[in-house]
Length: 111
Image (tube, rainbow, N blue to C red):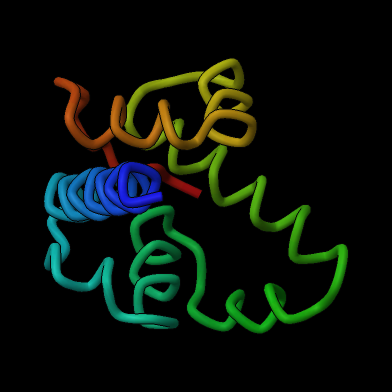
């Protein structure tokens, strides 16, 4: 049981560090990734979408579509394509650290 708790905490730490690095690469404060709701607002700013999109995440089923859209724009912001977006959706535990801890550079998208 203690081993599972350790693994769980290690995964959480890896995801926090990865998101921190993603935010930092995008020129945002890294600590923003650990503040609930504010982290979504900052993520929307990173992918160049308005802050009020956070309201769309409150609507069932619509939130899934817009969540995928945000992940795709995040993927494109770091120079990846739709295949990487699918990886973020299905295996985020692997692809988020690749994005944050890898050598990818942030390139702001134009609308």
